[in-house]
Length: 180
Image (cartoon, rainbow, N blue to C red; front, side):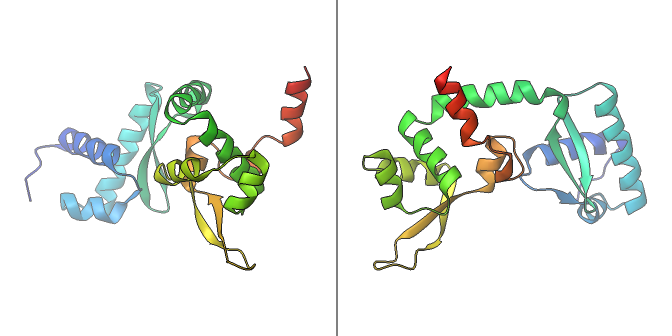
């Protein structure tokens, strides 16, 4: 285990670890990792979180359930949403996006039900969405042949900046847009 020179170095190492981590990291882990008390870790995190807030950073460090993780600053939600929509349109075909919308609003749903709505084969779109971890198999339908049921994932929620499916726009809102 390397020796740490000072608190500033520990803060920089914490930032690097949190940046690459996909999941929150426990206070206990950091305490063991740096071989310092949890009280010292809490103090370092308090300072680090205050620094991010003070400079109104686009990234914040938050604590949940005695664990820490980096998140985007909610103040910049509109910019993030704009970016996500731009990058999403470049990375996912119109067919896959259409399929994703059907799954999001109709889940759990079978491939045959998706194809009935779309009117075309959806093999490639489903494969793409599964590879991108936006949808997953959530079970099998209790009918002859027991086809797979598809549903959205946590990655889908993250990508669209929502915490649950209730936050999806109502279908009626889209119909109003089409009429105008």
